[in-house]
Length: 366
Picture 1 (cartoon, helix red, strand yellow):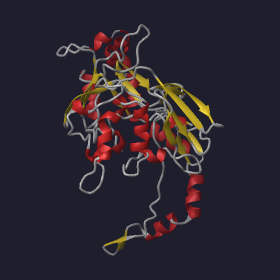
Picture 2 (cartoon, rainbow, N blue to C red; picture 1 turned 90 degrees about the vertical axis):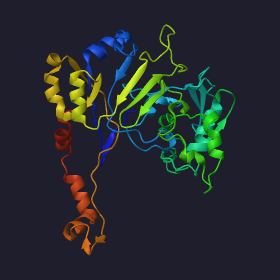
Picture 3 (spheres, rainbow, N blue to C red; picture 1 turned 135 degrees about the vertical axis):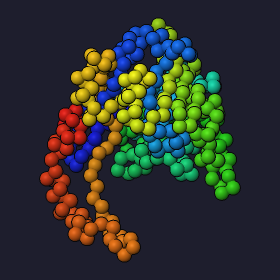
Picture 4 (cartoon, rainbow, N blue to C red; picture 1 turned 30 degrees about the vertical axis):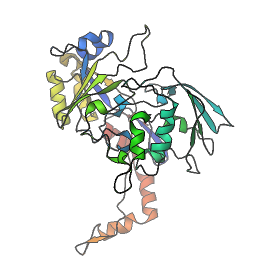
């Protein structure tokens, strides 16, 4: 998802990350997926490292990156990574009603989960009402569903077999983007919401951890989990029931398998890429200038991945506490930091453009 970064009252757009991709693997294989075939497996595959192990396979309980969910789940809408426009995804269309207080989504026909079971409006209603809006489920998603100044939640109800309606307390344009959050399988997870443990909490809170057999993780995205070896790799296989088709009706995605070796150092990842072990790698602005000069010699291409997702900000430590009889923050600095006028002065005086230039090596854009 493409977002803007906000610093003070100015919106900054940072055109990152930079994607480094092998010409032989990426450019050619884009036309002919068979070029991704490995010698051992003889299937089209893409190998791209991640820095650490996934922490959970349960989207609702996830708050970390890296995670598997960008490949395994989809929501009603999606954001075009090039234009930034909100587009249909699991929903084929939507319409506004009730003076812009209502959104009615129509699901695509024939949607299925990775186990072959139908994906229906009941899954949509379950995902929102029983998981994301359920106060018994400690999910970070809930706050993103609050509407406007009222901070109230939407009402979600089934209309018929393919239509679901969201009603908001006030018109709120950003809500459409929020509806890209994953739809989860009611036929698998509903019983975990209803069943309580000895403390009276839903056993859902302990389900779909990384120790769960991968075949039990049911998804709706382009890929499903095939294998997870702790501290070694995550392997995804194409979901045979994924809804999207090519222009000739062929199944998508074209790449059969994606392999994520777990490499805890970005320097090591770059070395592995240059040795041919990885098909692509994300690089920081620090490496950009050097690598850009070596494209032809190194037989790779650097692609600009568009605006980065996230927020950058400066924090002042306002903690007035003490430890072992000593203040946690120097008393003089603490007085500065706890003075509103000082913080305002810094906000006015800070040279944002220089920070952008130095941090992003000329790749940032105001």
